[in-house]
Length: 245
Image (cartoon, rainbow, N blue to C red; front, side, top):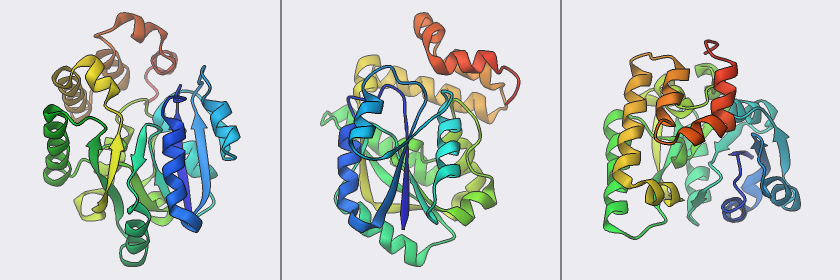
C-alpha cells in the first residue's frame, strides 16, 4: 500500500534507526527505496543488508526524491529523511489519512532527539511555522497520494528548498498535520548552534521566496564553512549545473 522513499548521503550513523521504525508499519509498508547521492561511508551496505531497494543518483535532495518517486510502484508515498525516526503510532495515523484525505498531503509533528529547553523551543517554532505559514520542512516527512503528487508537479531537481518548493505548490488547503511525531537528529543544530543554524535557514528561505538563483542560495548556505562549500557533492553539482534551475 505504501512506498517509502529515503534520500541518503553519508547517512550510516542514522539510517538503521530510520529503517527500523518502518517495521512498525507492518504490511502497510510494501516498498522501501533508498536513493543515494554518492555516499562514501557504509550507507549503501546498510541499505543492502536491510533488503531494501537502492538507487544511485547525482547529489541533491530534490533529484533524489524525484528519482525515488519515479521508481515507486504504490499509490501512496512517504518521503522520509534518513536521520528521522517516526513514533509507534505513525502507521495508524497514515491509515486513517488514507481513508479520509486522499486529496491532501500529510506531515508529522517535529521533535528533536535533544531534551534541552532550546530544542523544545525550536520544536515549538517549527509547529508555528508549519501552522501559520503552511511550510512544513522535509524533516517532518511528507505523505502524499501519487495523483496529488503528479497534479502539483512533484519534486523538482533542486539541491536545497525542494521541500518548500513542493509544499508551496500544494498550498495550505492540501496539507494536513498528522497526529504523530517525527523525531529528527539535532546533531547539526548542536554542532553549529541552534540560533546560528536557524537564522541561516530563514535567510535561505527568504532568498528562495524572493526568487534568488539557486547557486547563490547554496553558496550562502555553505558560506560559514568554505571547505564544506568546496568539497560537498551538492555544491559541486550546483556549480556544474549553474543556471539550469
